[in-house]
Amino acid sequence: MEKSSKIWLGISGVLLVALGIMCICEPAATLFATAWTIGCFTLMAGIFKLIFTFKTQKFLPNSASRVLSAIFEIIIGIIFLCNNLFVAATLPVIFVIWVLVESIFVAIHSFDYKKFGFPYWWALLLFGIVGVVLGILGLRNPDVSAVTLSTLIGTAILLIGAGYLVALFGINRFEKSLQ
Image (cartoon, rainbow, N blue to C red; front, side):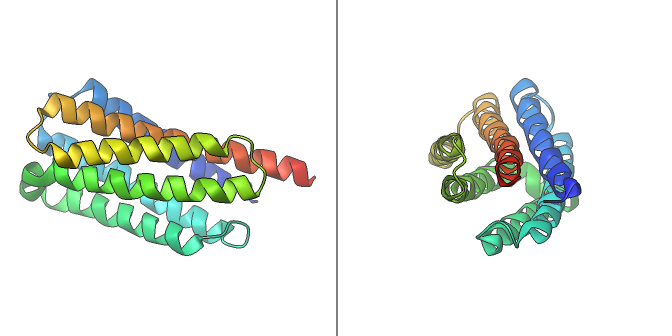
């Protein structure tokens, strides 16, 4: 796999980890500033994931679901950047839905890594399952305080980003085994 493809995946993972930490550490930030920052990070992560997917579609199965996931991230990023008033009112629900969908994709893709013999495929599955549980909790409790929701969502995003970084480790290991 091209080095640039791995760099894009690594950047996506780091951005999502940073976003998760920001959500956990700064729950009192205004929704407008949070929406803009999250919009930028989500848009960049979606673009990087789309580039990664197109560059690796020969090697990794399920590229259609990866493209769908990347397009979903790009759309969410654009919505957050362009509609501050709308986002201020619906940010928790939109974000929880994104975390839920992305966590499902992480769990599904973990089985691709298992097929390639990556020994830590279960970590991706675990990250995906935990993200789904946190997403469901967020949807079930929309009246939860901003601090609690920021912590739940931040943790889920951090896990998704960590999942991307674990996937990058798996790709590197898989390439070494081929050599």
